[in-house]
Length: 461
Image (cartoon, rainbow, N blue to C red; front, side, top):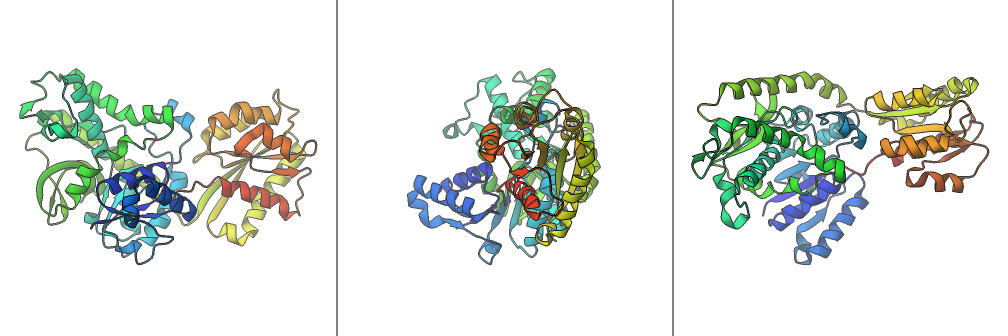
């Protein structure tokens, strides 16, 4: 029985676990907060009681987890949902936070012997860094992205041509369209070699214009889904049975699109692959169109351009951003300095975190910092009254910050209201209350900020 490990049991992690369980695999769940993993295990047992003995939780990277045949890395992509309205390709947006988490995953996978499948975006960049940091063979690390693009592209072709893709028909296997290149805004279909039941898709009515429309649809599909439901936890798991069959076939002429290491370019990118003696081997069609060759070059160049950025974010300490908004100039600088000093002196916190404190005197300045800071603001500290702006601090949080910056946790400075009223006004995002004035000697004030920073850590590893 093939044993599969899942690192990061958020919504996507639990969807992967359920699909793998349905396909007959043993699943082992590992999460930064074990309570979440146990909850998912119990939920799976309720749904699949006959599979009780095939569902397990590992609280650490122990000998059981390191004995997995394959592990899937599903660290949550840490995006601000509002960003999806403004940027075409968001797959690097989560790296300022996720790089630290992925770096820790890689360190724990040193000497691991099975396959590593990177699902965390940007998959192509992350696969390269995890391969290097974990000192793994490039043949053992692959990235799950182009196969999802391929699935989406095939779905749209089938819709336009009226092809039934239900599993019983076997029509999916007759449709050879594959998406390659970057899993992102440079993904594209290999239309020159695409067929259905032995007939060219061009001959079946997929013109160049239609092919370009479908390419654009595939690139935007994930964004469109996330804008509506904030994740893509269902469609992403549907190619898993085909992928797992291919991964453990040892030798097979079956070709799928998956992101794998290219020695020539020293990067990972989506390409047609067959499995030979347990090693993914590139298997491009003999003749692809010149335009596709150019598109592949552009995709490779984009991935190469992002490597330095990705490498710089695979760090030992997590970057935590704090914004202090105060319209009283006399307190702005001293309080900002005090927060930085408390963070450095807190040995347990500083062991795995590095803090940057931003300052703003007006809501306009604060909005600019929220919108432009790499990785986003983790905690925003402000007075509940702001005399220098039209809005009060509470209204600003309610109307501007919380709806648009979902990973920002507010901490309130106030001497004129109580914690219950603040919690009622702000809701579940309320990170704490500090009685004014901020005491530069009071470690209890730092503890409120520290707790808010901890609350902002998603339970994803």
